[in-house]
Image 1 (cartoon, one colour):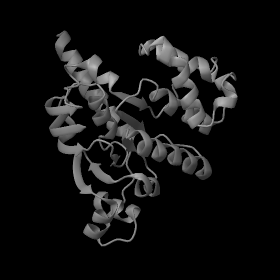
Image 2 (cartoon, rainbow, N blue to C red):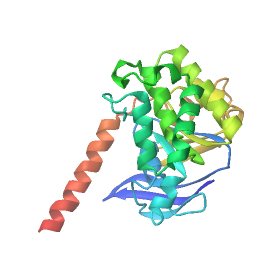
Image 3 (tube, one colour):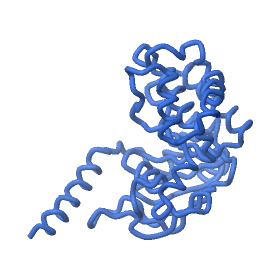
Image 4 (cartoon, one colour):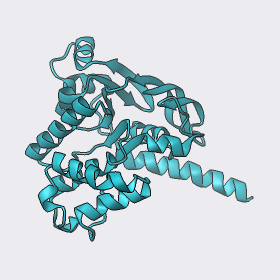
Length: 264
């Protein structure tokens, strides 16, 4: 479903993603893990048509995201790190708007919205403004929205960030049910190692722009002679605190230099 070969993304002299390769099978739950600033979000942006690679190849359901933008976008749903719902609209209106944007046939909209709001236990709150929802309810609504156009792939970029353990467990139970019943391929990032250990069939760990390990959770534990995925993750990436902001500043500086150079 997803194939990445020798993928590179550079900003001037700074290499954000450095020659990575991996594959995600249809119907698989795949975790893409790494410290802050490791290259996870940059990779997701290239997979979802938001960035063009410097070099290498990417295929999403057999298509190149940098060429077949619209066709690739039809094939995935995405839940971003930051909230993206309209708080002034109701839950139903948020989903209806998404249906219109993705040109879901009018006859199918009502049935699809009702099914997904029911699946994520939000049907009783369908007419309430989203600003009245808890963080967990908003996340469930965002995932429901991402599935409205029946995508083959669901990208989840730290979907449980800031949620309490009960809500996190509830949300992942919904995602696993969806994956099992509808065979939706799930590509996720998270900083909660127990989540990845619980839901992902395979894992890739990226650090400093390079993939340092791939395999099942058990594979990674055996490779590092550790008992938990978190211990394996730390063994592979080190225990130094990472500063994502610093990496972003470096990228901004490089891009600023390129822009000034072009103006001369």
